[in-house]
Image 1: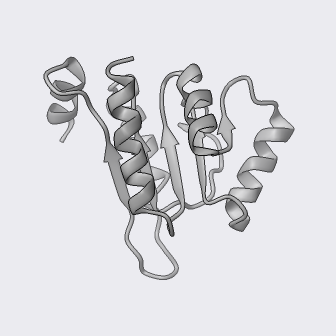
Image 2: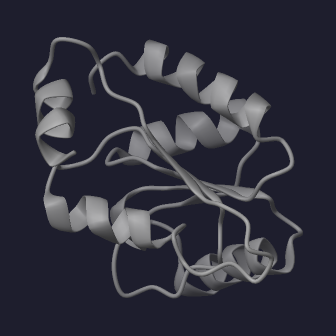
Length: 136
């Protein structure tokens, strides 16, 4: 994974800035999910997370007991994810479809008329940066 330490530092700043928000962090790497979960004390969801545990984490996020979750690709499509107003993409395949799915996790109509934010953390002068620029 490209510049994991730098991306983790960037995530720390984003989480600090959005302490009052509902945040979903996306990454393509299961090991990074567990590393972030441990460092920031955020419930993790990966392909190793059992269905009952996944349902419980998402339910607690929905009810506001958890204000953040970190997930590998398992929340990208076909999973009913509770509303979040901030999403952070640390890594992914770069596909338009994957990006659109993740964007859709936060850009749902808000009851309170509030806004949603999506951060995409990319490493400078890499394929990630070129893909991100092209997608925009």
